[in-house]
Image (cartoon, rainbow, N blue to C red; front, top):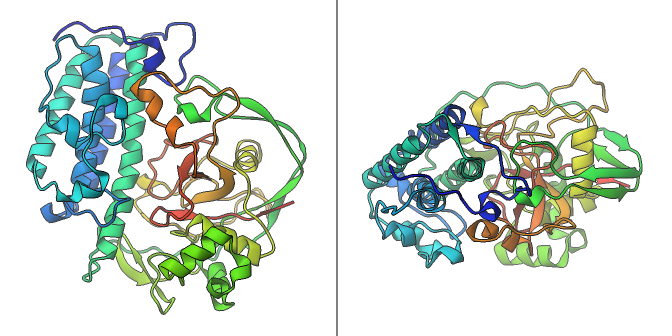
Length: 439
């Protein structure tokens, strides 16, 4: 292989400092790379070949595209940058599997990804194997330059995001199939009723927000900065399906006074009457395990921000800000444990009482992403990275709202208290729920 080129310090990682990043153990990075890449392929194992290609809506992508795009990332942003005279696996893939990086050239229309019957699944898997082999050679030494290791680490976190998208996109695809196929056939374990909804009081004061430490984070989690918060109360657990049923039966979807103006327009235009994947009878829900009885004790999921906000108004509460959520998660004693992808349940589970007492914060991590009322904006002092990596987060900081905490489809270890997810307020196909707050 050709020698490694030192990457531009400003493109290496969104958390670069003036000092050159220290070299990283090649063996450690190679192990992490192999683990993440294998996990993505394993998620596709239950699929039939026909499932890999279909696109159910513009916001979703075929599984085959996810497999190819995550390989494209390593080829375009790692191999091409790190190796002299690099020869691409297939020049056409640079166009087909670019997602939104305008600085890297033209891209195939997102809405038409489901029309890509070629390259075949077999060819895409061969593409992945080719990229894995080249990355393996890149990591065959004893250490890796810090700047290069930072981009590879970013690529692995990027791929973990796509692992969750594979599941959410497959769930939506299977839900619109009249056969309602199951992604996996698993017994649903019985869980106890969740503890009564209670509130934890958090005092006013100055707090620090944003990532701290030497571990990886995305650029939108920085810079760490101080914020002042008034005292507030945060619910000890997310809202359950049963609690949202009360909102529906009280005419929540018919009462304009509960809704933001844009939300009410969405309700009327889209004909929303219940969360996505619930049956008209309100007795069943579609899951990755197929159609099942609605679990009234489990956290509510697959609701838009508009629905979350409407429920909060109906309940006489509000949604927390992302600053409140992070302060509570980081300093309120909430364990960074939960029902993540590796649990294998692939659906939210009811909360179990914690030894910390009735005001212990539960399920802050895992189960469902929690909508906050905060617009997705840059933190004070934020500067997007130069070059293509600057397009990763910064350009989406408008018309989006922040979610926190991760879900049952999020890889364990991928999220943290400072992690900022974001979607447009009408999005429903993610595992998104809500937790109440009040002043």
